[in-house]
Image (tube, rainbow, N blue to C red; front, side):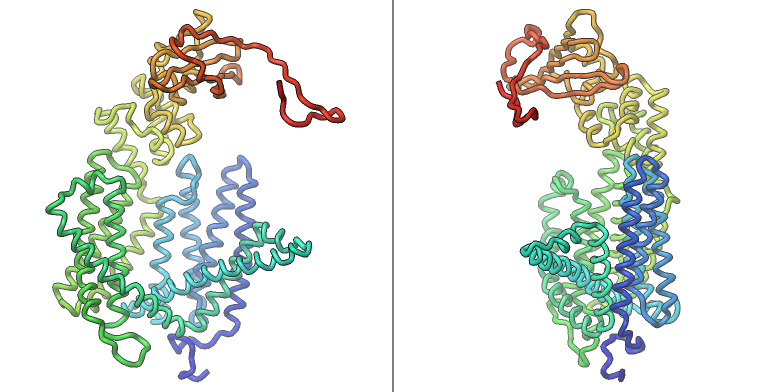
Length: 579
């Protein structure tokens, strides 16, 4: 193809007519292998090592396939292959360590998300180095690849949605004439993943072969986003000028985290200021003529570059205040790191404006590229199981508990059991063995809990075991309620508001009537033992609780045999019981 008729941004990339078909096949194969690995993980049963292995395989395939589809070119093809395999292996390893870290065996942890963020940053940097043939990163080229990847990736996802909608339409048409083959096919997980993979691969392949046209889409996206730059700049300047008048109390007391909001605002500044200044100082690349940036957009971009720093300082302040009040957690450590990164970008913005004033954009792009390299490396490093944020958090939270800064009833036992990894569980085991009596009981409950949310809800306002036993009126007198049953009662938050009536039905069952807040009906619960009393199950029986009024100690409880009538047809029961 003649250079003048090339549809590629970089005319050094020769035409690759088979690319859409090859990428579709790569996506189809990856979709099937991903489905096979996920299905195998689900069928592994109690073999957690095997399940983790299949989950890691699925992660490797998905990341490697998407990375290859998004970055491959005939020029230095082996580079793209190595890039895809490297990041597939890295993120699979991070996923493997995440799966073994917490009791819930969650794959998508904060470290896993950090590794995904690292590969997103690495892609345009790698594409630039590939084009340059070495470790060189011209800022304009990096930015061009970043915008192109974003547009092509988003368009590919839209095409996947359109493909599913079209296939559903075809299936619906055939359903009308009694042929359900296509609709049944759409219900199969393997087919859906293969369809998604082939559609995404084909779309990316088509767009890559015509990425000069994608440049027009880039400019359109930037123009649309740049319209928002003056709006955000004005709003943020007004917000910052209002702080001396309104004070900072509203930031710390709001129902939405001040750190999250300010970091999102800083990220919005970064995106919109780059959209406003365009890919080149005063020019639009590829238009053939200079197009000066409109003054309103240039001044808006300058303001946005300057407000990132105060927003980042607010985020750091909000997080530091939260840490001082409630201690370290992995989420707060990641949040503080994010705020410090935003702080670095804010300093870069001020430095570029101070050095070059209205011509700040060229220096800012250089600084952004260097920061992107540093942040990519930092995200990769921190996503690997080298620094244990859970161990740091467990030590800090345990010291707060032992120093009396937080009461045992207010301590986040669920986080220690489920969020802080092996270090958190080891701390709970020590407390369960050697801690004070109240802490031993709470630590033991946390270790035995299978669900962090029910544990957190149960322990939030639950009375302790001694309070529960003091509130109990037991019938017949002298009969004791086993400790295992008391633990279940405590986890359910019962017997915390006055008298708690226990009526034994037989050796394996008792009914509990728990007093509640004034104006609320008492709760009636049937408890049944299992495993020779080691485990107790509960069943709410509140259909007639509205009849329970007055003194609970005067309530009479008995278990009566009840006969029911039901219709039978040809010896088979039909419908519900009646009478």
